[in-house]
Image 1 (tube, rainbow, N blue to C red):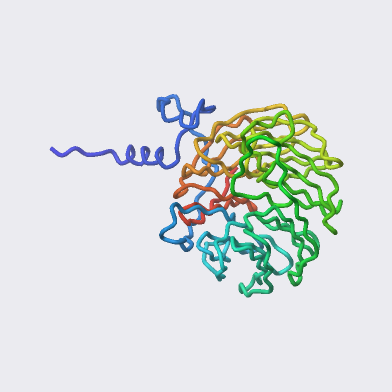
Image 2: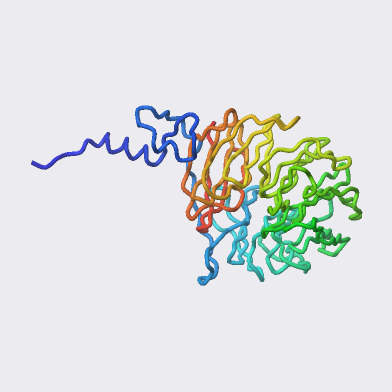
Length: 394
């Protein structure tokens, strides 16, 4: 006699596979897999899948595709670039493509906005201003090298740092050069290594300030109007700096009141005074991506695959969450939820109170580009060329 399968059991098992069941505080990123089913706690899923949209693949002969251009939202549109050298405008509602623009090189930069234009750079050193409605090119500026970071917009100026370490200010109206700041890399006399990447400038328009991090572990405060160096701080010379380490400041500085938070890739996270760059506190390990604030808590996606939470006032550690193996993206925040992508094929959702993992969601070939939250939606681009939209439920 043929055996029959209870359909309810089948649906329940499928739900566990898709949704996941996690222990309240996992000891390691994959510890939940070894916890007996009866001891697992199932939390309400923090998201509802909305849509997935594909973008064009890059060159067939590339060793491994990686997508670093994070999506950004403006109005009813999502804008995102790709390693294939195409820049897209897509409908926020359903991921439908509105237009695409072909750049001369791959896009690893993140878009910014000025009036009715979207601004993005490519690996050939071109900075483009495109009309949001139809993708027509308004202007193009040729800079000195790859643009790997997001431009920053302040008033009628666009600020961008290239891989050569030059900071440019161009007119948002026509792309003409207003000023540039070139600096020589500083060497500490020991073996010093860098990784491919650049920090985006952080603009404080009220103070006419621009904060920029460099590959040698240096942070500068510049005048936004003229490019004058107001102060410079070498984090490579701090006691917390490691020998033979990647000391790059590749995450965008985070300005908060009278301090700015910056991090070296595998060194430390620092709270600096915006007045003179003095170190107010530091904590190890560091990070190669951006940080996030949730109330009085600073969240850091460290280079070791852990999320850390610190009191922003004095740097005291609140919790440590081992999310997984691989590289983490910058964290984003929605209410009491923290989300961060992982190169190990997941988008991860963490409780901000104690850092325990609530859920993971598959992301084809992993995530290198930072996610973005807009209202109650999170959008992220995977290395598999998929743009995902999830509705957050908290």
